[in-house]
View 1: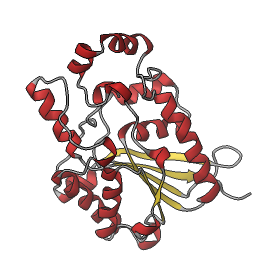
View 2: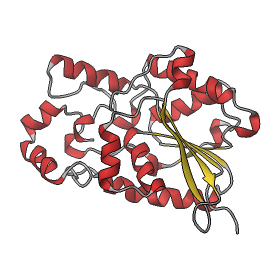
View 3: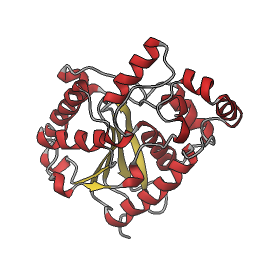
Length: 254
């Protein structure tokens, strides 16, 4: 039987972004709105985010050549694409950036009318939405013009089907966003709502942290992916890069 799953799968959250920095500034100042000039898709990496990406590049470069990713999929958002490009530039990827697969299904969760608002801003401007989120919970709550976690999971089911169809037996790197990392865990491990939210409550996914799976042929009739590590930041600490775990600028609705 042909192997459907990748041989190895790494899921990486992008490096720290300018949005992370702006969010922290807004919260420190007690503001309701986060001051970011660009669209979310265009928000760049911060200087620290570039440093984190370079540290991760060195970790991938230290792997034997035959164990490094040979397929790269990335969110279309600039901070994710730039993270992958820096990993390549640092010798961590034999895949050229022109061969990266930019997949919109890996994009950040969309926040709709709550975009750029802090928790305080949501409470002030959209108290009804804050109450809906409290009642429904973050897994099912969908802000107007935005997405719930379930909506993200729906598009990720399709993305995993594509990976299974085209990249079985390969070594795949995905560079994406915090909610995507968590929702992929939900799908790959068959978790429940309660289980994935418990993982989420333990702490944010760190910028440039590695979540890694390996193919286990003995799990089920056709094998399954087995989690090897989650939120792994040793590549950053070993290189002396700062570890940051701020949610993206839209954290209040995450």
